[in-house]
Image (cartoon, rainbow over the protein chains, first blue to last red):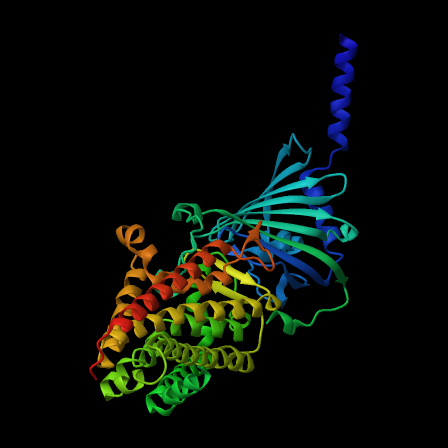
Amino acid sequence: MKKIFTIVVAWSLLNHLSAQTPQELVNKIKERLEKVNDYTAKGKLKTNVVFIKAPIASVKVYYKKPDKMKIVNENGISFIPKGSVNINLAKFLSAAGNYEIVDAGKEPATGLRILKLLPSDENSDIILSTLYIDEKAELIKKAKNTTRDNGTYELEMSYGKYAIYGLPDKVIFSFNTKDYKLPKGVTFDYDDGAEKKPDDNLKNKKGKVEITYSEYLINKGVDDAIFK
Amino acid sequence: MIPLLKIEIFKIFKKPRTYIAFAVIALIIILIQIALKFGGKEYVGLMMSGMGDSFEEIPTKTILNGYLVCFIILNLLLIHVPILVALVAGDAVAGEANMGTLRLVASKPVSRIQLLIVKFIASVFYTLLLLIWVAVLALLVSIALFGVNWLGVPRELQFNVMEADDVLWRYALAFCFAAIGLICVAALAFMLSVFSDNSIGPVVVTVCVIIVFTILTQLQIPFYDETIKPYLFTTHMLGWKGFFYVKAVDGVTQKGSIENLSAIVKSAVVLIGYTAFFLGVAFWYFKRKNILS
């Protein structure tokens, strides 16, 4: 019994010592992201919002250090949710500025390390950021942000060949939608018998925007004029 | 029949009032196009204001294109075109009675039914020409002025977007549907024309019916929604818009889809039914009519 107890204590102590501190982990992720000075990426944007029916749009995403980011429609009509500029993780981390990091353990289902970032700046738009980190890969897999103005939004990232730069192949951005309603006197809707959803169903629903990146051009230079 | 039809068409296009409709439509469409050319972004911004709370910049520049301008024009105009159709269809028989030529025309070696058929076909011909005029000005000129892009259709509780190459066939079907609706109005005015010896009466009554029915169609009072609205032909005349209501899976528009095709078919059947009813009454009455003028 004593032997087993000693092994368990020794194993957990060893495990604890080998685990990175929250600050170290965040620094490693930042280091990886800082390899990218700028990028241009082509992507497909899919909108899944209760009141929008839209085809998948082609977009181009531009990023330049430290915090310039723009999503441009290549063709067609697409809607970029408020706060989605934080799709870029480097900007996301630098935007939080000086922050306190609180270790919140691991997510039981996935084993992802949970870190809570509390910005020290009282005027920061982000009140709380929760990061779900794959410690081994040193990649942020999920992030939840609570903001002052745009509610809470969530980012989910999948990585592929650009993981070395910390750039995702796919980002799912979940956000709260506000209600959408136009006066019937303006739209002169045709009543085609489709089931009318009560107004409450359209209010404060979660919307999702997915960007699947097909191509990154990293550190090739991006003109500042694009961000104007 | 054909020579008779040519004469009736000649009569319609000899009257200056026939061209008023073409001029009025051209004027309205051009005025809307000018307004949207110079203030379209603000208009689209206003139209999309409900989305401003959830989204960053609304892409008003791409939303405002020839396809949307055409949709806006049709939305505004297809309530008024029936009034212009009534100007000619309401005059078809009553105009002859008013001028004192109906008895003369009816005494020609053609049956009254043939005469009425020819007069109605002439009215339909005028209606279709008017619609083609609308299509040319609203769609082709708008495309020339604003270019093409994806079409975004605002609805009361939804915003439907479809790709540019998924739009033209919808307009083709929408104009065909609009033709069915306008022919229905022409049939109503034509029926009233048979009852009257003065062309002003049928035109005014048709216009009044359209105005009252359109107001009832747009009123959002549950009592009317369930009792009267489904039976008004003006409710079904909006069916052309159904071609721009799309199906979606996980929010993604299904190319080539129509949200509820059966509802559109039902509306078309109702309009054809009304047309048949109006014409039936017109033929029934005209056969027995004691023509004194």
